[in-house]
Image (cartoon, rainbow, N blue to C red):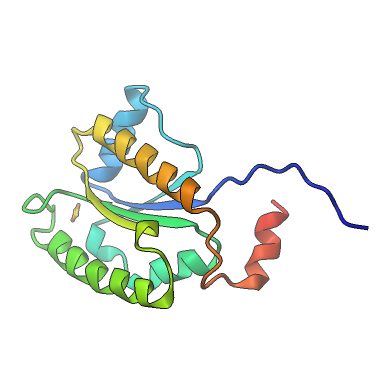
Length: 152
Ligand code: FES
């Protein structure tokens, strides 16, 4: 007998945020009571360049439907040039993901400063809307993990 479920699809969105700007921007969004979707899972990293492209592949493997990387504005990185490296790496990775069949819209790089709580909220709402429209990401998904995810 086939199981009938009324579960509404809720995408999993991973947001890597650098400690010095974007994470503080997320914090400001929270303290300013600006809303952004609860399914955006923030991972705080010291700098956007700390995000190894493999982290993003791993996120997709583990069931993420969208991955966004947020860092300081160009020229404002706490470590001077970290975000330049991150930008270069991500543009290569995103082209590679596109080649693998993962839609370009599932990944994004955004610069959000500590003073831009409103921008953080707007970016996350917009990204979540895009991922909702794209639906579930089935590429790269590790099926051993899928069972864990579905069971809570
Ligand atoms: Fe924010 Fe480097 S510290 S991008």
